[in-house]
Image (cartoon, rainbow, N blue to C red; front, side, top):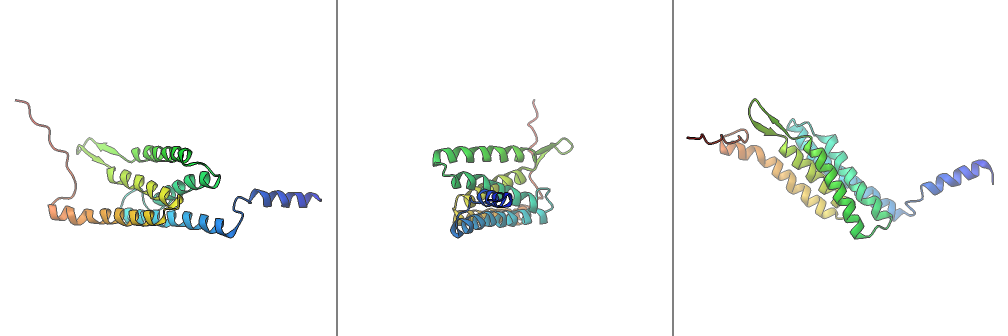
Length: 171
């Protein structure tokens, strides 16, 4: 066997984690679905002028799906897989915490919806990666409807945002 034949055989063996068309289709479907569903939520946030928009939501969903898919492909048992999910959820929670700010000038907290949206996007990515496609789609539609209802509800209430209640004066 020549040197190039060994190199080629090594390259082929390194890409053998998808042995057949069924596994390849499953991988492409789950990762693509996660990215598309993340894009739907991200597009809504981006058109609302939020910092965490299309790319951020797509990457959170795709990464979450991948972190679930890899151990599943390796044959990890569900109890071990649940620990992987816990780590992903905690890690994205840490990312979300960075989007929450309290401004002193108006004494309001900003970024809670962005943080909750990213956390939800993580859950949707996990569902897609775990092969729960309908759960991921339905969750995305529900989350999107919640985000889209914000402005009509705010208009109906006659306000633009939530204000922190003033502390009661001591007598």
